[in-house]
Image (cartoon, rainbow, N blue to C red; front, side):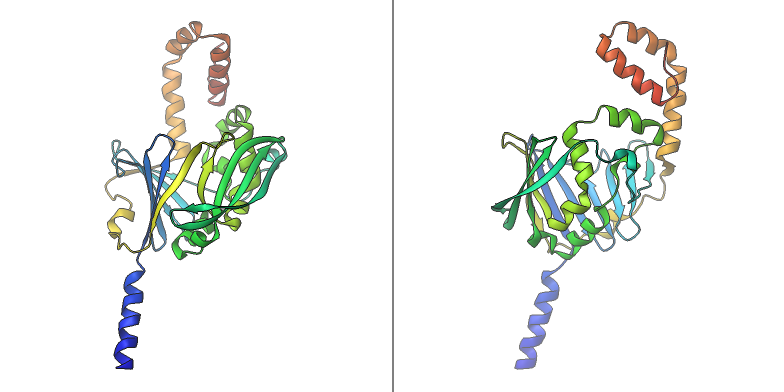
Length: 268
């Protein structure tokens, strides 16, 4: 009888732990999903990936953007090193502010987030959720990655020049620091309005492995190759762009000139 009971308990325990699905909701009420199975994670929106989705190989820290309409896979390279030029651009701080409410059934701690002394809002982190195996491995992969490595070198300067101080602060604080404190369950703006929130975490499903396979009949490219193609298209459309800029405000024209400069094709 004891052996039978022990076998039943083990069987139940194994059945209770499957893959992991995390659903989040933004301020517009739109749901996004993170699905994790083994060494792969899938990020998709409300359309279930019909308009595109991201696959992440957790073990190798490789990122793939899948574009079904174009039948294309775009591979991103990611690095953990942060460039010195990105440091100390703003005075960034993350302050603990006590216990937060339970979010999706998980206990949280609240942290206030500032840039140059100005509030950027707050974030609720859960160590309990981070303790889930699949989520812990996802945090280990994403933690410490430099977001700028997803942007082609030619465009980084322009993006940094127009980046919001709070976004710069988040990068300086780093996902690595945040991930050590817990899994982000809820993000609020300075007025307390929810920007994004985890609405459910399900560790029971058995996901179809095909969801995490790279489409074999899609063409493959890299961000650098894609941006080079865009640069060539912009060169061919130079006359139209110059005419369009004549109708822009000085501020819009300056922004367009900055963007064009990054492609080496700025109209005079």
